[in-house]
Image (cartoon, rainbow, N blue to C red):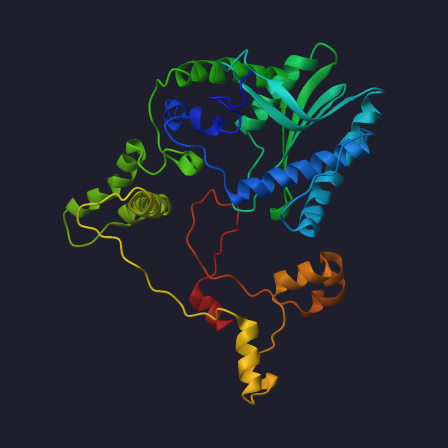
Amino acid sequence: MPEHALLSASSSHRWLICTPSALLEENFKNESSTFAKEGTDAHALAEYKLKKYLGIKIKKPKSDFDLKELEYYIDIYFDYACELISGSKTRSKDPIILVEQKLDFSSYVPEGFGTGDLVIVADGILDIVDLKYGKGVEVSAVNNPQMMLYAIGALNLFDSLYDIEKVRMTICQPRLDNISTFEITVDELEKWAEDTVKPKAALAIKGEGEFSAGDHCRFCRAIFNCRARADENMKMAKYDFRKGPFLTDDEISEILSGIDELQKWASDVQAYALDKAINENKKWQGFKLVEGRSIRKYSDEAAVSKVLIDAGYTEDSIYSKSLLGITAMEKAIGKKKFKDLLSDLINKPKGKLTLVVERDKRPEINNTAEADFKN
């Protein structure tokens, strides 16, 4: 089995909507990042903790990242996982508990496989748990195709051994304080796999079907110069040709609904063009590569301090002292101690009012600025 699945579970939210994207991405390097490396180290530590808890001998992994921070957040995932494991033992005398388990769902997706961070198989419920260490985007387990494909792979292994009625899928995102759970019956899951996944995967493996731009483009490797994404965002240009001096309310609402994606797209195109200019000496018509503004900084702070003190200046006159910021302080003294000592001294002002799409989970503000001013 190859190390890289073309139609992976982790990218299924893209190829299930934009079926040709999986093959298109093969034209681009799958470059790793610092965030990906940090995630890998976090998963290695989580695997170590769970296997040690289960009595499996494993060497503790090393990391170049802040081990104290890794330990703190992985313990949140570990504690939750242990609760699920304990719960499974009340339903079955011999539940199967697997950590970093390879899951094959190739009966629906050609060469499809993935790795389940934690799989718990017991009578009644199959648990699939996924650790996401990132803190950029909150991920929901509700109808999450990655989790559902993992569940299909686990059912293929264990459905005949246990009386499984439903699947419970959980995403644990400790750095965003997000634990999202979604349940589905086995019949519903298998119907989704047969009616939705199988035909889409058949198109995707051949690079067929229709390109479709949307939120799923975010981590696509073809994001920078995909024509479908460009066409979708260039629709905004139609407002240049509308008659009348003012936009209508409906037109403004339509622009607002696409403006975030338009800004992301423009930023991605700019980053792509800059990378080509710097690394491949690409010349873009009408543009040139120049050196941007920079900020002066000391080359050696210790040497600067010595020179000034030797010149007669006091430390009080050349150094400033300030209290650690809230995040840094919480990290320095520990979250529990921070809460015990400083919770009464923390003030969280109201955030700046902003317009977001209706599906955003934050509560709507109904009071007007005028009413707030009067209050």
